[in-house]
Image 1 (cartoon, one colour):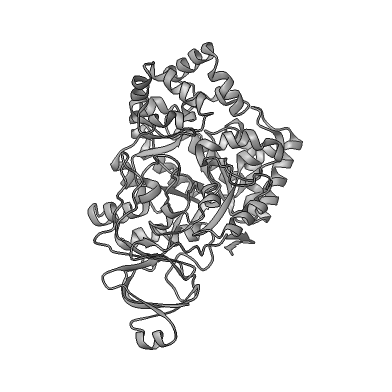
Image 2 (image 1 turned 90 degrees about the vertical axis):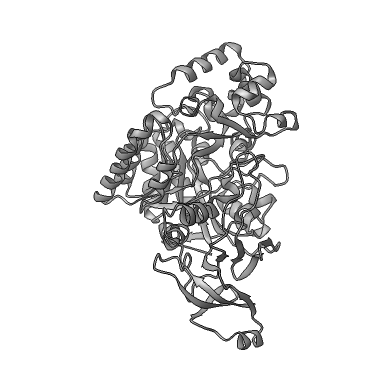
Length: 539
């Protein structure tokens, strides 16, 4: 069905100054953009007319770091994303996701994945490959467009299990072959999370060899780097080395510097970005606009605790003597390990989700408060919670400064993301990351112009991930649009009450169909899976 958007201010995604114009959509394509298009003629041809007077018409936002991997199969509308103007998201983050998944590893992998993406008995877990997983998403008809990064941890698991060791030559060849198979299935790149098991067991050589395969397809290597805190400079050097030796494009996930004692490293961090670019290494990153992060609570445990997978974690948590060693390592640190308790503190780490009803009273508490509620030392209370919930616990941690958020946001390498875990009492970025940029950092702080912000939400990520015909309000491009009120748009969720849709997002159009109309979700789902074909990411 045709749609005519009248009287809007077009922020087209290019970064160029906006302008007043009408936009005519013909099914899923932007057919015409003109200073004025006659409404009567359009209506006679069956078009729906949307009056966008006082509103901004922008491309649909692209979330380059999403954790809807499981949620899209059980709640395919993915309303928290669509309601904030997101029309495309990239799954498969942090080296831990849904596919590939050999049948013999379904049980331990579901436990490993649960703290990040949740768990569900509503789906058939016997899909095995990325191709089959993406077909499952297609079959449920998602509410927005979905892309997938093949995760390093899943590849490693299929090739050599979950052991803490390096691959032999045969296993490394198998990892590269799996990477190629999944890139051929349409993955847009490779992800890793070098604080998560089993990715953390790897060394650079392993990743470089896999990235050589990804580079053949002009895919991205998306990385939660080994450290965002004490050893962030060494970590960045490792990532740059991977880019240099493999030829792959580098994309840092949720770029930041964690912990007060590390804040003075930000100048050197920026310097390393500049040096990499001068060397010809292609570097980009995404960022969520908050001073707090979110991940699975199990990351506070020392790396050795995770050796062998979640079942081994639970065995160690049940051992009183090993608990003492865990506390010692957390209190004294391990070289090269990002110690969340050290850079955030027990009182600045909050429980956001659990698996069972038994521990729902822990949601919203910091770890000191959890200890008080249980009448125990905070460490023991936390270890008990992880044990009882089989490590399926989410958390929020406060680590940064507003000054750094703005400085990183203004960098040319930056595009926006949510990186929100969708279960329980989530980080408010799940519901509001993109409107927060538009309301707080454009309208209130004036850290970015409107056009700069829209570029970082649309064309910048589309270009970075080779999405053909997307990311701009342009004739012939995909009719994925967000129409919002620039005077009222803002995130509403807080860390106390995060499950709130934003204000000011009036219309969201996915593939030419209204997913949001006058601020309300329509229930329509018109997204598709976007697969990499050659050098392009297309349907």
